[in-house]
Image (cartoon, rainbow, N blue to C red; front, side, top):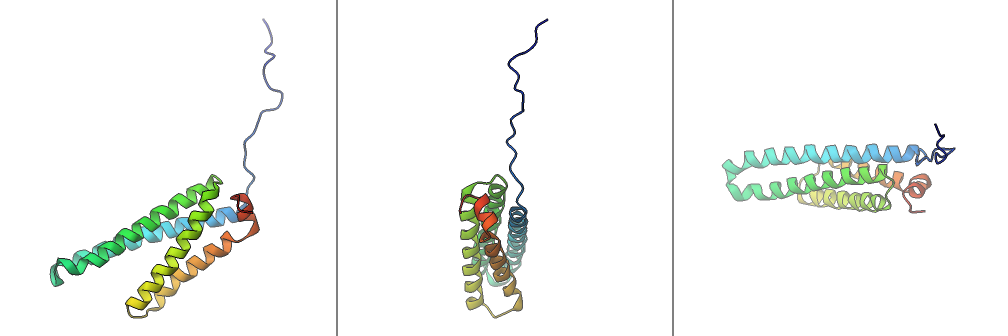
Amino acid sequence: MTAQTATPAVPATTEIPREPMVGVLRALLLAEAAGGLVLSIFLTMSASMIGPEQGPDAAVPLQFAAAGAFLLGLFAAIASRGARRRRSWSWTLAAMLQVVIAVATGITIFSLEWHPIYVVPFAAAALVMLVLSTSSVRRALGQA
């Protein structure tokens, strides 16, 4: 019997150091993804209820808004996955999503009657931007 001489003495680890703020960012992005999916379902259901009463053309804006909310949720989930893998593009994608959320909420406020629920998307976008601007998240995602 011969001993194996090619085995490494110390196993190589590719473990990524834990960053708690990246976990907070991931949780916020996943919450935005879930919110986008719920909003998409709600808008689709609203469009199906409006269609028979006011004609099929009245439901088209709600269907477009539902598609936009679904895409927003999808991209938020992708950004969360990228943050988990410490990809630098996830920081950029998350920041761009927050701008889109703020602009879409602003358009909604100007288009419809004011309701206090419109503060929620602005607050969520501001919170995610605050987390994105912390030095630990920027360093972990290659933006520092």
